[in-house]
Amino acid sequence: MDSELSALEAKVEQAVSQLRQLREEGRDLRQQLATKADENSRLVEKLAAAKARIEALLKQIPEIEA
Image 1 (cartoon, rainbow, N blue to C red):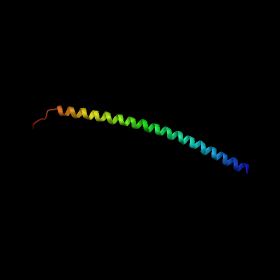
Image 2: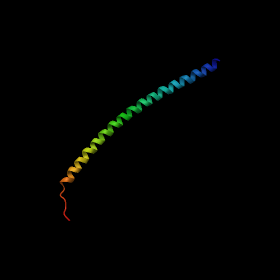
Image 3: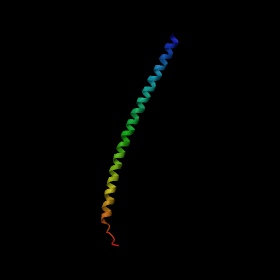
């Protein structure tokens, strides 16, 4: 009986340890996701600004009559 309780206790401790590790990994992944989302937003803004500058430059090029 004692050996069964010890085995069960070990399994519970292992499950708790894995739960803590998974929670930490989940927290880290959420943080990474937030960082990447912020980076993505900044890149989208930079891309929109570059597109606007290119479109403005294209409007300045005179059209060639054929």
